[in-house]
Image (cartoon, rainbow, N blue to C red; front, side, top):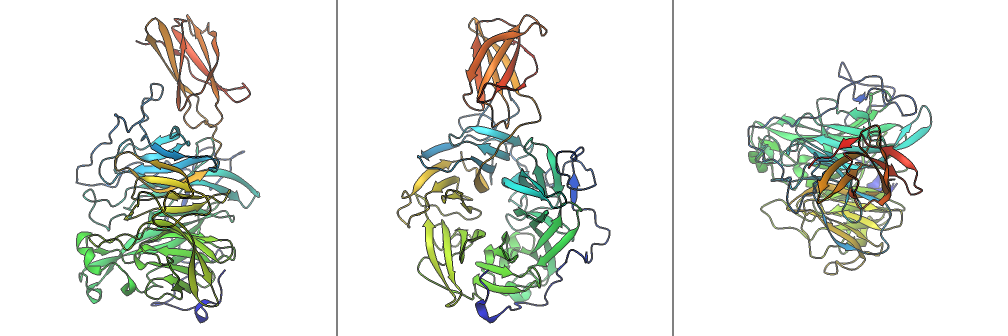
Amino acid sequence: MFRGVGGGVRRRWGTVATVLATAGMVGLGAEPAAVAVRPGSSGRHLQLGAQERSLCATRPFPTTASVPAPITSGSGVWSFVSASALHPMRVTVTANRRGTAGGHIFVGPYNLRRPVGQTGSLIVDNSGNPVWFRPLRYANLQNADFRVQRYYDRRTGRSQPVLTWWQGSLAIPPWYTNLPGGAPEPGGCYYIYDDHYRVLGTVFARHGFSADEHEFLLTRRGTALFIASKPVPMDLTPYGGPKNGAIEDSEVQEVDLATGRLVFSWDMLQHVNPADSEVPASDASSSGGVWDAFHMNSIDEGPDGHLLISARNMWALYDISRKTGRIGWQLGGRQSDFTFGPNAQFFWQHHARFRPGHRISMFDDGCCNSPNPPEQQSHGLILELDVRTHRATAVRTYYHAPALYSASQGDTQGLPNTDEFIGWGQESHYSEYGDAGNSQGHGLQSLLYDAQMPGSDISYRAFRHEWIGTPYYPPSAAARARRGHSTVFASWNGSTQTRAWQLLAGRSARSLRVVVRHAGRTGFETAVTTHNPGPYFQVRALDAHGKVLARSRVVRLSD
């Protein structure tokens, strides 16, 4: 894709790094396997490897700073009688017009200060109602890049939809000041869940790197491409930084999910000159002596196998040959192979993706290396590259009203109906626009959907996906006595097929009978009222045809 730019491939900096090929397995040594699987993941569920290991990154990276507990009550938080341990954030939907794409919305809410609601992985519908929530126990433990992908088993030729996300601790001051802001602390990992919400596998970084929150991409080869990061000690005085400093290096790693072997790696420090960074090395003084020169934040794979890499702090995208590891071309930054037409230049970008033809999409943060002012307003951006004239032209832009200036994070997702879904990163919004887009100052044009997270809650990325969830666990129920009647609260965290509830009651757990045949589902939790005193109750989840999907355990009435 986009060959012939810049007069052939060029080496930017230092020595070309070793590119690991599937047959070589160079330098793996005695490192632990990069993939672990849950017990019982064979049978009709695809198997990711041979090891069995417990869940990963269940505790945050240690900190001596005081971490505030999440706010778990109030108008910005959901609370449920039948699922009392769940307190997800409550979003406010500000626009919901006809024509939006199908599917649910996927976010990983967290906060740079005190979260409103628990952190974790959250699926919501267009009304803002939770569909599935997996909370984390600690405010300084986060999920990121939460989305739907397909896992391919190349041995059987089968594939299945899965949920994937990163889990770990982000370097957020004052909790963590040992690394640049937003860098992953050691100990993070990636999760793969099936459509029953069971762990299929967990994936770890190699070469002494830490799994990075910015990207985890499943391929049709049965592999996972992801970003891994680590500080590399370096004398930064030539760049204006400390002598005993370090540079935050990033590496593209690819792991075979069936074997756990590392099959490809590409190290940014060995290919790109940090002197071209837009972040001064002197910034290392506020982050443990570590300079965030590159800040690699996305990987995409083109149809020809080339990789598209985004480096936020270089203001640049790079086309990488998987075969040689060489840079084919650079878009943006101080060594750009392209010039830019009106509104085409970008700054501090995220989520670069190949699009059909000679197009590339991204989220252009346009902002900011504090305390400097923003370069421009944040927006979704689609560029067309002319490989003959080496010129990039803006063909679509997607702005918000009111204007947003996102200092980090964000994404621009192309939807199957040609709409664009925008996650606004460090600004607490996500939106959907028609394909035509809009221009600066006209953010309401083409707007189909917009929602705002409570307080200063944010999500690294936000996605819209089709998803069918059928939980392996049963529905939940709780019964309360209220003013002479009984109210039973029913929920089934993650069920996308439940359309109604059936209520059973009895004087004992063995004498239950149907007392409410059909009560339409009214959101995550439905309150079903009956004059039957029970005191024993049970609910059954019904699908759109009235078929019983599952039943709760029997619960007893309480005041």
